[in-house]
Amino acid sequence: MSTVRFATNGNATNGGTNGVAKEAKGNGNGNGIDITNGGKLNNANPPKVYIGSPHKDFNPSSNDSLDGNHCTYELVQSVAQFLLDRVSIRPKIGIICGSGMDGTTGCLADALTNSTSFPYETIPYFPTPTVPGHMGRLVFGYLGDVPVMCMQGRFHYYEGYPLWKCAMPVRVMKLVGVTHLLASNAAGGLNDNYNVGDIMIIKDHINLLGFAGNNPLMGPNDERFGPRFPAINRAYDAPVRRMAKQVASEMGINDITHEGVYSVVGGPSFETIAEIRMLAALGVDAVGMSTVHEVITARHCGITSFAFSLITNKSVTDYESYEEPNHEEVIDMGKQREPVLKEFITRLVKKIEADRLSSK
Ligand SMILES: O=P(O)(O)O[C@H]1O[C@H](CO)[C@@H](O)[C@H]1O
Ligand SMILES: Nc1nc2[nH]cnc2c(=O)[nH]1
Image (cartoon, protein in one colour):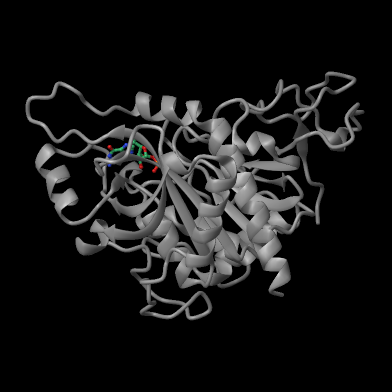
């Protein structure tokens, strides 16, 4: 392997910035040094930020290709190997942070210890997020004692990416060794019993994009990922949902925790009143613009999946109302709920890991 370059966010004794391609975002002071340049650190395990260029040290195999409608198994394998060559952590749990839950000081990814983060633009073939509130880096580290990899920023259809590309990082997780996915999102609440700030454990989804003929699994199927026609009726793992409800009880947040049906729409426009009424009539409890393509891709390749929504706004159902949903309130609510969500996820990850180890 050629020289691997990282910057650290810890306090460097020399305060140097040699070789730093970009300042680390939202995590410490961004006072990066290139550890390959002999910088001395005063912290044993400061957060590290990879500062390489994506294709410089990337050695794809001969069957790598990323054409208009799919990305080969070999390419995903090469991307996974690129990451594995640069981190020693071997996570079994992958986390995707929703809008407003991934970009603030004190957010989940910042809670990881011994962390190494890869800005998405440094990872070969990774898309880059364009949405405020989605930071754009892949962080490896320990949440409590549990090794995890965490997507701080996800990809949406409305950004212009095809669904398979939005979900490609999930396949990278799979080939890194992840067995469990934990995805969060911000969503509008349709269920009358839900309030802004509540958590909805997703028990099922209605894939409206799929109904319209758009699915992340469209295109050539590689059986090494999974079957051509995967079953998706048990997408949201029942035992993990039970663990999540147990966590909610232990935290004393049962009153704000629900279980319900999520529906994905393409966005970026929010829903009309007629659309909200239609979704409610279909049995939808919360609506958003993500997660479903990630969970379908995860289930296809055998990853156990769990997802929850933070209800960031109540869907407007009244033609007399002057209320309008907006992305700022979505991000604000994510920030406000950060401590609770961080605790919720940390406890859940601990339970998943204990269960995983005991059922080996
Ligand atoms: O699903 P996440 O990424 O949490 O974000 C949700 O919030 C944004 C709208 O405010 C949309 O991107 C919607 O999907
Ligand atoms: N589609 C959709 N996505 C959201 N994300 C956060 N709130 C909403 C909402 O009301 N509708």
